[in-house]
Length: 133
Ligand code: THU
Image 1 (cartoon, rainbow, N blue to C red):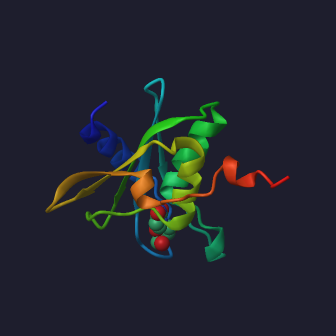
Image 2 (cartoon, protein in one colour):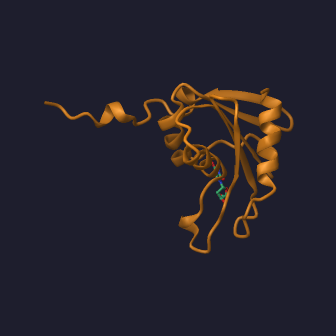
């Protein structure tokens, strides 16, 4: 699965975006270890805080199908520029792909990969839950 193919899957996911409040469509595609791809879109709500981002939609689909480790997450938007994951999504990614990569595309600058370590250094993990004796 190339980054181009994963971004194209994210773009197909974006077609179902429900974003009447922001009018900003986002799509995402998660590549899991066995090669399966799960797509997602942002889903907004009249109670704006209940909105879920595209990448979390895709990740929740993957986890609910039994996957526990992702290789990559691609994100696209109607803006056609690099659409970086929000803070909550970065933290959500750390749980399932601490060693993973985020793939973004900008219409002028092309495709770029970011490690999750670059996007969220020191993200909170299970190790941080251990209490001192
Ligand atoms: N959005 C995402 O889907 N992913 C992000 O990481 C950033 C924000 C969506 C949420 C909302 O529907 C719209 O973009 C504007 O914030």
